[in-house]
Amino acid sequence: KQNHDVSSAMEDEALSNISGKAISLDCQTHSSFCREFTVSSPKMSIGKVMVYTCSVWLLAYGVFFFTENTTVLSSAILITLTGMMLHIHFVKVDHESLLVIGSLGIQLSSSYASGREVTTFIEMSRIKDIVINEAVYLNQIIYYLCVLLKEPSEPNVVSSVVPLFQSSKPRLNCLAKVYKSCQEILSKCQ
Amino acid sequence: MFRIDLIYSTVKTSLTLRRLSEVFVIMVENSPSPLPERAIYGFVLFLGSQFGFFLYCLWAYVPEEWLHSVGLTYWPQKYWALAMPIYLLVALMVSLVVLFGINMNNTAPLDSVDNITDVFAQGQRSDCYRKGGIPRLEDVSISEVNKMFYLSSET
Image (cartoon, rainbow over all chains, first blue to last red; front, side):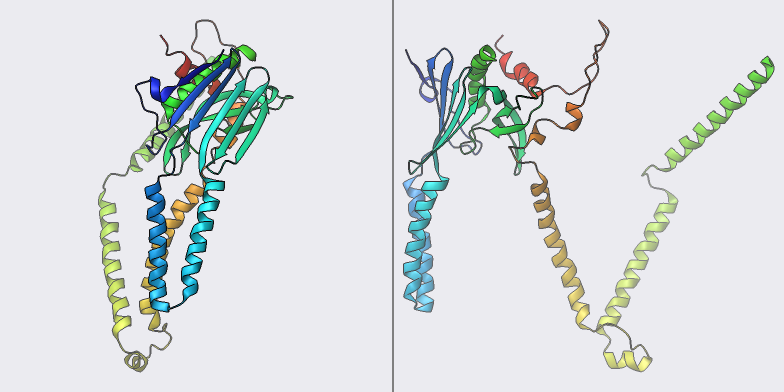
C-alpha cells in the first residue's frame, strides 16, 4: 500500500526556496523502510523566455542597423536557439528526488527540463547521517540538507559531505520535514 | 632558618606586587582615550599633510624652466602629477572589488567537510566527568545538535 502526501495541497504553509519562489514537496511512503521525497522547482515562465529573446533580437537589430552586416542577425538567432537548448538540457532542473531505502542505501536523482536524469546511489555502509547544516552561501547563510559519508574503516570520522537539493534549495520548513522523515528510517536501520 | 624563609617570602610577594602594579600601569596607558600627546601628534600630522599638499601643488604648477633656473633639475616628469592620483584612485576601487572576491573565494563550498567539523573538534578527548559536576566545554557533533533542534520539538 502506498501513502502519497503532497504537502503543498494538504498543509497551510507554502514552501519556498531561498529566493522566495514557490516550490513543492512530495513525500511518498512506499513501505515502512522506504520513502521518497521529490522537490519540484518552479517552471520556466513563457513571459521570461519571450523577454530574453526579444531583448537579444532587438540588440542584434540595433547592431545591424549601424553596421549593415547580416551575419549579426543570423548569429543572434543561432546563439539564442543553442543557448536555450543548452540551458534546458544542462542547467534547468525540473525536480530533484531523494529515495531512502533502509539498510540498503539512498538514491539521489535530479531530472532536467529536457528529460535528462542524473542519478547517484550511496550504500548504507558509507552513510554516517543525514543532517541539516548551516553554511555561508555567497552573501547569506542558508540551511541545507546534506549526507555525511564515512569510510567503513573509520566509523567516527566524517570523510565527505554530499549536499542535497542543490538546485531547488528549499527553506528550513521543507528541510525539517524531510529530515524528520529520514531520521525515522535511519534510526531503525543503523 | 624559619625567619629567613619568612623574609624571603615577604620580599618575593612585594616584588610580585610591584611587577603587577607596573603591568597594571602599562595596561592603563594602552587605552584608546584622548590624551594631550595624541592631540599634539594629530595636529602635527595635520599641518604636515597640508604643507605636503602645498608642496605637491607647487611642483605640479610651476613650469619646468623656472624649476631648472633655480637649480632643481632632477624631479619626476609632470605627467606623474596627474597619473599618480589617478593610479591611487583606480587601485582603491579595484582593491575593494578584489577584497570581496578574495573573501568569496576563501569561503568553503557547501560540499566541504570544513562546514561540518575540523581538526580540533575531531581531536578532542571525552574524559568522564565527576557525577554532579559541570561537564567540560566541548564541541557537540552535528548529529546531536540536529536531534536537539528538530526531533525533540514535538512536545
